[in-house]
Image: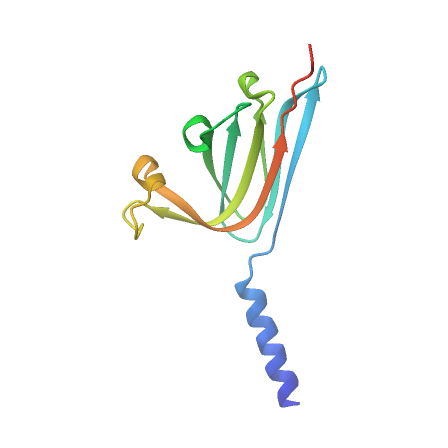
Length: 136
């Protein structure tokens, strides 16, 4: 009986520590080309969504990509983005993160913090998509 109670206590503790969530990326098309990106997340706790766009032939993802970060609240979230025409033929990626670390909290003073004032940690999910450009 004691083993069962210990196992039950461990299970309940584990459920409280884990952050269950769902993340999906959907592309909507118009005239044969990606037109909108819809990202949905179902969260138990606050999280951060990082979204990056890359043009075709990118050689320096950090410098040539366009990056944005959005704070997401617990519960159901939906973010809709228009695909920038200049990114057709390129790609998009999104990641869900648990922690936002400010420049002052960053132990290494990383390049991202130096440039943006923060970085994200504890990645929970990652999705990627190719933004195919219809042949003319």
